[in-house]
Length: 255
Ligand code: APR
Image 1 (cartoon, protein in one colour):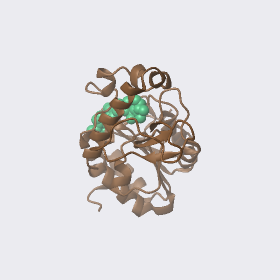
Image 2 (tube, helix red, strand yellow; image 1 turned 120 degrees about the horizontal axis):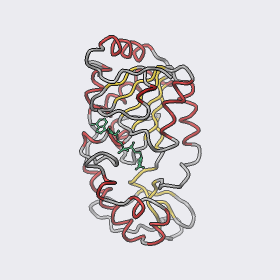
Image 3 (cartoon, helix red, strand yellow; image 1 turned 30 degrees about the horizontal axis):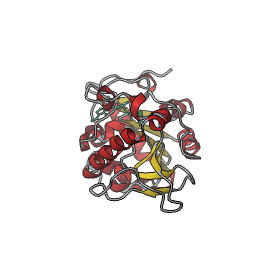
Image 4 (cartoon, helix red, strand yellow; image 1 turned 30 degrees about the vertical axis):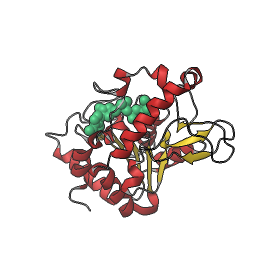
């Protein structure tokens, strides 16, 4: 196991190395979690003010919760959908889009977030491992479709193809990821020269394993998170700071 640096302060050489490795890498894999959207005003899940403190995930984010009470689950997702659509991408989302432009083909971004903020910031080589809160998915034919504008949306939505009820197009606990999504991420993290993990507690599999996978395959691993996580001891450089400050520290004045 590699030894990480638990605080960025006092270890400029680590930050310098991380900047240099990132600047010259031709294959970069990035994983993001709820922490990157926290500065945009979207709550995380497991922090002190996280959603799972106020809401029991067993009542909102499992297939059985939806089977028991689809109305309650849909109302919760409609509320979150509205909040998410009012939020704007922050500087960390933007800097990842800038990094993608610089690296080109060899860039890959896997997010656990369902908030669309990466694509709204301009990221293209992007996989949404846990789906997207702005879409519904037909319970009968499986078609995915955009939800109506959040200001007009009254759940549940109905499939534009077959008319059956749609469910939120997100991945609930105990469900499989969208077909091919993890495989794409796995390939990118296996081949990465630099892996960057931003704002995730690294507690939910299979995404949690991606950083470790990259490290085991020789990547230089950078973590940005104000708090330590199970991934921290694997990181070559741990930036104990928020996503915006961490991305700015890594990329300097890039635009
Ligand atoms: N910048 C960077 N990181 C932050 C910030 C910030 N401003 N604020 C909080 N964090 C960190 C926290 O320290 C924590 O480690 O973000 C992490 C958020 O962790 P979680 O709430 O567990 O979110 P995430 O890792 O994305 O959760 C994974 O679990 O509930 C499910 O499906 C949901 O996609 C989600 C998955």
